[in-house]
Image (tube, rainbow, N blue to C red; front, side):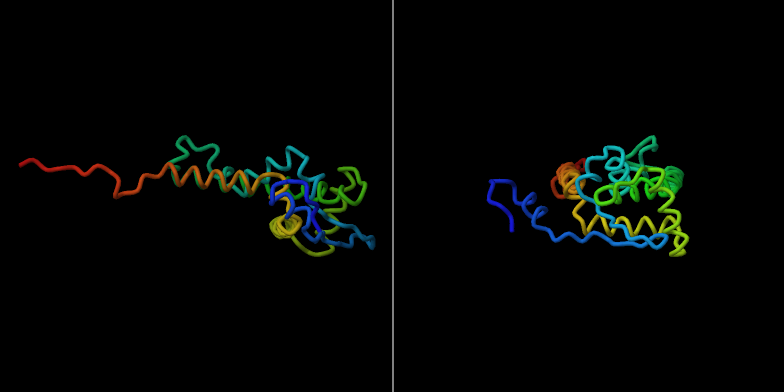
Length: 172
């Protein structure tokens, strides 16, 4: 159970979380994928995941982020989809290094073998990795969940309810 250190509840919840790392077999060898401290300490990976889960990847190149055009949305979707293979390669590596001392080039080869053996593409691998991240508490540990919640709260505060707008009066 958690220790009583005066740490915030969310930190204690993470530390008490049952490890749900995914065990995989590649080329007849067993590996564990875990998205914990090693993954959360990889700045580029956290940035990649934040861009995707926040939706920032869809709008980051839009001229007006508050009112994106259909073309902006299409281009953002293209950018996001084209980032998925790189995210998978990086994610597979950072997921492996917590429990398996591998180099990035070896992780890339393992990922490709895993994909071939399981007959999956990058979109399916991304979904599998993302589920592992959720189960392992990666989004909480890295701060992504907290930042998304803060962004949502800020968005709510910026919206002015319709009944608070000044009513226009007609001329008499």
